[in-house]
Length: 119
Image 1 (cartoon, rainbow, N blue to C red):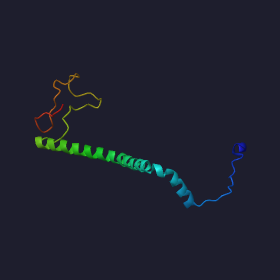
Image 2 (cartoon, rainbow, N blue to C red; image 1 turned 90 degrees about the vertical axis):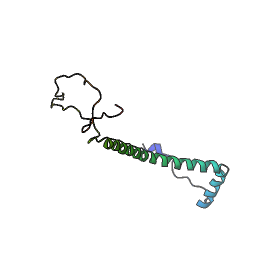
Image 3 (cartoon, rainbow, N blue to C red; image 1 turned 60 degrees about the vertical axis):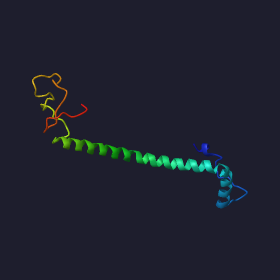
Image 4 (cartoon, rainbow, N blue to C red; image 1 turned 180 degrees about the vertical axis):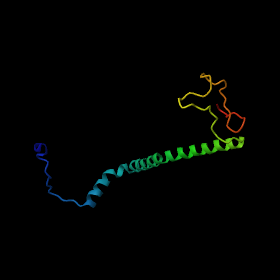
């Protein structure tokens, strides 16, 4: 496998340049495109910030929706935001005699007689 690295020794140069001189030379090449480079750098930073902010904004929105739902449930006098469901036996079936769909699709909140909106 040593033959793969043959001829890849460090080359020797007849000139030596300092870092400052090399940097000024490279910046000279990019100077005509300075506006485009600055715009691209700003967009990369903005994209990174938005990528980091998106999960935070979504979590904040979900928290607000949860608080709004809890407030509307409390306003109706319900003790729980979840509708009451029939009890299940250890085998997974309901305790009712009929195993078909429920007679009414509207379920009432536990603790009040109102039906949840949007169901």
